[in-house]
Length: 310
Image (cartoon, rainbow, N blue to C red; front, side, top):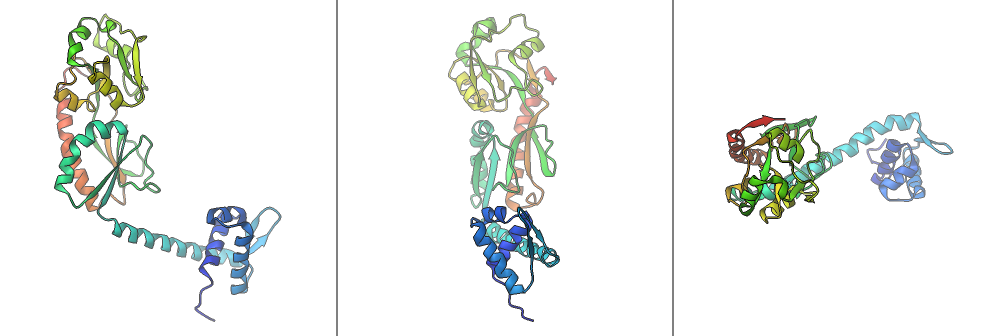
C-alpha cells in the first residue's frame, strides 16, 4: 500500500464525469475532448487497479468502486475550492463591491458616496450598476441596493427607505402645469410600468381628484428613471417622478412640485447581502453609513402632505 496519490488531472476528470454521468458533458466542462477525458479515466483506473465506470452505448454508470470513491473525491475538490476562496477573499479584503440599479446609483448614491469614501479611505469601493437581481453565489458582489417588496429568501435584508410619486417639472413650467396639466407634454418613466407598484398618470390624476385629464398622446418615454428626471430638469415636460431619486434636484430647485398630492408606494429600497458576508467589517461599515443617509430620505417622505399609501 502506498500513500502516493493518482494524478490530479485524472481525479479531476473522474469527479466531473461522475458528477455529470457523462463523458461528453465532463469533457465540455473541462475544455478537453471526450477522448482525452476517457484517457484520464483509464489512467486512473489503471493506477487504482479497479474499474470505476461501466461504459454503455449512450451513457456511463459508476461501478461499486466508483460509487465508493466519488464522495471523497468530490469533498476533496470542494475543499480546494473553499481554500482558494479564502485566499482570494483575504487578498481582496479591502474591496467592497456594491450593486445597485442605474437610477438609484446616479441620482441618489453617487451624490452622497463621497461621504463614505472620505471616512473609509482604506476600503476599495466598487459600484456595479445593473437592473438584474444579484446572485451572491456566483456574482462578485458584497452588497446590493434593491427596489422591491423586500422578499429575498435566504438573504439578509434591511429596509432603507420608501418611495413616493408626484408630478415634477422645471421652474419655468410651474404655472403652466398648475393652470392646465393637459396642455403640457408628459414624461414617462417606463422603468416603473407595473400599476401595483407605481401609479400611472391617469391613476395619479384620479387619486388627486383633478378634473383635468393629461394628454398622454403628447409624451416622452424613457426606460431609465434618471434619464426621465434629466428631461424634466431640462424643461422637456412634466414627469410623474420618484421623489427619492429626484431629491437632489428638488433640493437645488432644478425641479419643483406643482401639486401637493403625492402617492406613496408599497415598494421601497433595501440593503441586501448574503448571510455569510453580513458580518464582514467593510459590509458593516457601509451598512451603518447608508442607514444614516437613509434617515434624511425617510424624514422627507414622512413630511410629505396627503400621504396616500398604495
